[in-house]
Every structure is written in structure tokens, then in C-alpha cells.
Length: 113
Image (tube, rainbow, N blue to C red; front, side, top):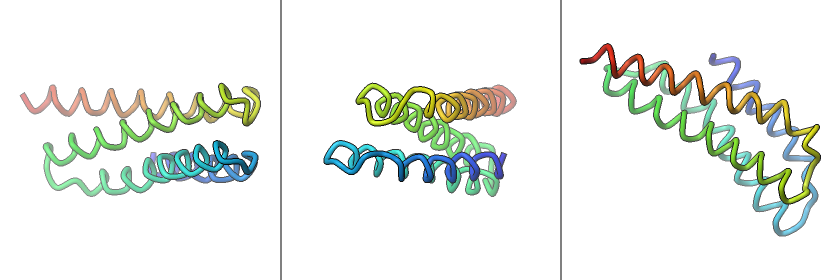
């Protein structure tokens, strides 16, 4: 998962370079770069969680960033900045990462009871 989140961030960085340079394009590109790299960086932090509570908290942060990345990817298509064909694989990956983190968090919470 460490490699998967890192590869997601790298793929998004390349995609962000293809977004047209305009006021809206630059703003959205900056946001998607921040959220996708945050997914990878915060997942690394999650791997070093010091307790179950810390793990749950860090999982929530990565989940939120992955979901936010999905939002920005949707907005890129809706704003007509890049084609849906180009964004679809990244959007699917953001959704899968989000789903895995939701499941991990739920399992950790359930085991803590």
C-alpha cells in the first residue's frame, strides 16, 4: 500500500502538469497535487502509528485526503480541463484507496471494542 499510494501521487503529478495553465487550472492543479501527495505522505505516517487510536486517527486523515483527491479529479473533468478518459483510471484508484482505508479504519475500531 505504501508503494500504491506513492505511485498514485506520482501519476497525479504527471497528470497535473497536463492541466491547462489558467486561473482555474492552476488552482485545481495545486489542490490535486497537495491532496494526492498528502495521501502518500500520510500513509507512511500511518505505518508508524504508535497505538490503535493513533492508527485510527491517521487512517481517517489518509481516507479524507484520498476522497478529496477524488473530488478534485471529478472537478477537473467537470470543468473541462482534461478528458474523462484521461482521469478515469486515477479516479478509480482514488476510490479504491478510499474504500480500503474506510475498511481498515472500521476494522481497527471494531477490534478496539
